[in-house]
Structure formats: structure tokens, C-alpha cells
Amino acid sequence: MHARRPETFDFAGFTLLPRERLLLDGASAVPLTGRAFDLLVALVRRAGSLAHKDELLDEVWAGLTVEEVNLSVNISLLRKALGQRRPGERMIETVAKTGYRFVCPVRPRLGAPSYPTPLDAPSGQGRAPASPQARRAYLEGRYDWNRRSEEGLTAAIASFRRAVAEDPDFALAYAGLADCYAALGYLSHRAPAESFPMARGYAEMALERDPTLAEPHASLAYVKFYFDWDWAAADAAYRTALARQPEWAAAHQWYSILLLAVGRPHAAIAEIMTACEREPLSLSINTDLGFHYYYTGQYAEAAKQLQSVLAMQSDFAPAQLWLGRTYQELGECDAALAAFRAVEAAASEWPVAVAARGFVEGMAGRGEEAAATLAQLHRLAGRRFVTPYGIALVEAGLGRDEAALATLETAFAERSHWLVWLRLDPRWRGLRAHPRFGQIVARMRFPE
Image 1: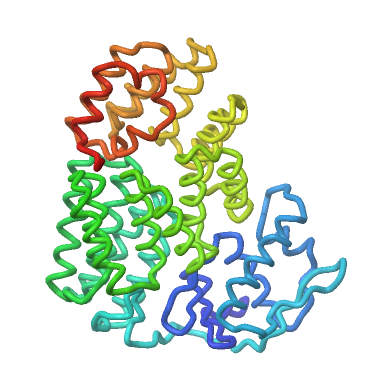
Image 2 (image 1 turned 90 degrees about the horizontal axis):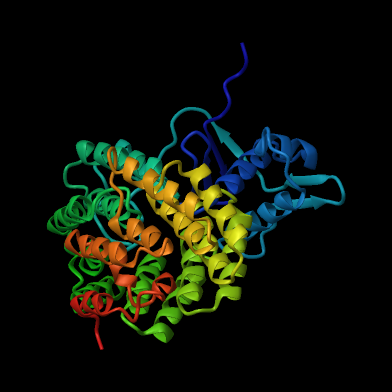
């Protein structure tokens, strides 16, 4: 029988839990991409010994043919993630032309990890959970939420629900549920009328249990922005969250998106840059920086930024989606279609990606392909939510302007969150002069 591998490794104030896919700095989770995390586990398990490049590539990228640069990029990411928290302390040694060695002393532990308390939430406030099981479920939920996939969000909801079952007064777990349902709505995995009210309810439950928290205010701002279209109330809620926790990167990130949508691009870029400074390795934040470049017409900068995200994690679907949209604006239709197909490979039958592909097919003169994609979206709508905004885009790509405008009216009735980008989305340039399009924009009541 093989000896049981340690479940936990301690080094330099960090705790590494391979089975839970968590790296903790004290009580706080350290954000790492999937490949970087797997690479860290491989190095730590060989601590003090030389890890050859070939064996690391075989282990971390099992079954894939990748260039050696992927290894060096992820080593660099690990050094930044660890070094920012322990400046000047060397942990990973490069052995020229051969491999790497983890040189920091490591203490392996068998059995379940002991979690420190109180819980260091992003706001730095909040009552500690009643049990280690609730804390563990909460951290697992945040890990899965950070994946930003439908599968990850579903897993996160299950984890947060375990946390509140263990401790019904654990406010941060309710805030986690609010963030999950907000993300399901934002990514169009669920209908707006289903997801955003759920997010609101859980955020309010979190504040009932702990009114000092920043997180639920940010969740409420998300709903007020994307579902209520109450620009002033969303702004106020984000400001409340930031006043309670100025260092919280995600609040700066989300506030930047509101500022961009309401026509304050200079303030928006300052906020997203602040978020990047706070969490330079966040896939979501770095993707949203590319998103800002896209919506301000800086397409070359957007492509460069999004490619850097994919160098960190090649299958991060949101970055692939925005890269495809960027290629489209650069006139590189084949590259755009390739990016959207990559998204669909990572997130099968995601209607947002299907619609993005259909629009490009139509604009590129591939009418039969676009019509087939439109039919695919209608079939998908028979078994899952498909945003009318996406259907309208494919209709517009096919030159069916009246149909597209009628479908945009449906999107308005369903409170599609995509409509907050109606003024900025360059894909509507062919319809901007149409009076009905202008009427829909006016009904959004954007700030002047």
C-alpha cells in the first residue's frame, strides 16, 4: 500500500491544501490560476529537490503539448504571488537549463488542516464562523466563485449553502451566495428576473446578520446597476462598500464597470487600475482591464491585455470572449471566430459565446452559417436561458434590422443586463441611426 500523501503543507506563513485547491496566507486565500496552483503543488511536494522541466510539464500539463514558455510564465506568476507577501524571501530557485527547486523549508502535515480564526474576510470584519467546517465551506465557495464558470458557480452555491447550514448567522456566506447569483445573471446563465432578485435577497440577509460588512453593499450595487438600472443608487452602494473597505480590489473592479457604462471613462480606468494594483494576478480583474480598453475603442491595447490573461490561464472563457470581440473590431474575423470557438470548447453551449460567433458570421458574409447559429440559439432556448440581446445581435449581423429591434424590445422587457452597454457596444453601429434604437436607449435613462 502506498503511503498517504500529506494533505497540508506549511511554509513561510503559508498553508497549502492541494485537495481543497487552496493556498492560505494566514487566514486569507491567495488567488492563483489553475496551472500556477498545480505547479506550486508539484514544487512543494519536491521541496529541496530538483524538479526537472520535463517532469513539471508532464505533471502540470498532462496530456497536452505545450511550449516551455508556459512553465516560465507560471513560475513568474508564483514568484509574484509569494514574493508580494514575503518581500525579499526567495522560495523558488532556477537551475539553469534544467529545472527549478523549491528552497523554502516545508512542513508537511497529515489529517485535516486547522483553520485560523477569526476569518479574515475581504472587509476585514465580520463574526468568525461557528465551526471550521463552515469556514472551510466558505473558502471552497470563494475558490469556485473565482472560476467564473457555470459549473464553478453552481459548486460555489453548494459550498456557501453548506456554510450557512453549519452556521445560519455566518453573514459572509450569504454575501457569497449573493455574488454567485449576481454572476449567474451577469454571465447570462440564468434569466435576470431569476438571478438578480436572488442576489438582492441574499445580500440583504448578509446585512441583517452583520451590517458592518462591505461585501453585501457591493452585491446590492451590482443588482441596482445591472437589473434596476438605478445608476445613482448603484453608485452610492459602491461608495459605501469602498468606504468600509478601501483596499478591496473587487469593489474597485465592479465600481469601474459602472463608471464606464454611465460615461465616465477616465474615472473608470483609474478604478480598474487600482483593482489591478491590489490584485495583480486576478484573472477577472485583468480581463476587465481588457474590457475597458475594448469599450473605449483601444482595440490594440485590449488584445494585448487579454492575451496576457490567457498566458496565465489559456481556458479562461471571459478573456477568450472579449479577445474574440476585440479581434472582430480589428477586422480579424477568422481570429475572432477561432476565439469564440475556444470559448465554446471551454464553456459548452454558452449562449453568449454562440451569439457572438453568429454576429461575426453574419458580418463576414457567411449568411448560411449565421442563420444556422441563430437556429442553434432558438433550440438552446428550449432547454436553458438564452438572452434576447444575443439573438438580436445575430439578427442584426444577418441584416434583419426590424427583427433585431423587436428582439431588443424583448430584451428590455426582460431587463437584460446587457442593455447597460447599448450606447457603447460597437456591434450596434449599423442600427444607431434607427429611431427605434434611439427610443430604447432613451428608455434606459442613462445619466447625461
